[in-house]
Image 1: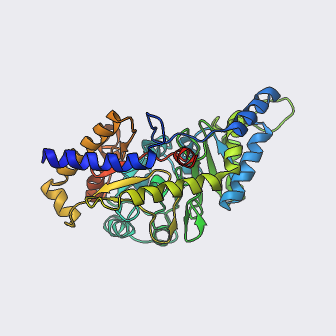
Image 2: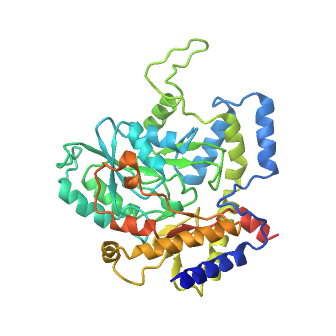
Length: 412
């Protein structure tokens, strides 16, 4: 067993080295691509003195993002978490409600639900997309509620309203948005898309974030396009966008000198200096996405002779941005639920950790998936479907270095 783990770890590290050999160590998981234009843009913004959300750079950032995504109304925020928090509130989520979401996601998804006063309700995912499984969602809803197109449904086990669903585009890969939309429409459950990682991803030729009544993006330092820290709320509904703009800027009533506010609100707007950093990257996002796809193809070629794991690729009907490339350790064709019951995935967990230890020692930063939300102490009490696929994949996913800069250096 030990020799097998060592051999597999060495085989994978050597394959990764063949892709990133021209890069100096350590190799980050996802380094942003920041060049001279970004430095110049930030310098101009700083010298202008217009560094707050009132800057024209924020307006320009929103306009370019709307053009890229095809979603007409964009409100730039100071983080993806803030954008999701406000999106949930605008969707009608409130204290005591439940919000359906995957457990395998970044903690910000569950935190935003909690900050809206609601309670996460976890639904299992599928290996094909890493997103919420439509089949499992449908089966779970049949157990806890009845379809009703006119009024919000009530979880008969808790008596709480199911106020929204938050599909997450994990690592930039869209879930089956058409099937999820059909189910949630039938149950009158508003959809808020967490597309934080999915700038440049599409499902059925629609940009990620196009299916929900509201959606969000993140521009954190590790995203394809970064503003250092930042996010955006997107919608096809003009009234929702105007309300988002109002509530995210302390609900201040416009006036030349008075400071009057008409609601308890938030200070969530993106500063201008952050927008200035992001604009040049948005203007070359096609190149960044091409570099990401090229990196995936290099990994695919390097891993062709490795049979004990699979490089995750874009799901059917989807075009992915490949934000984070990931491998999934194979389960030898056995039924995942049976493996879960017999605890066989512990072998994959040992292999995963051995690979991560060797990669760090080699100066190559890799990471597992997130600890599922239902395993965190603050969310362990939440309602959930059976989560055997989530718990299996947690032990088998490894994320690889995925910066577009890796292709810049490799291509000279």
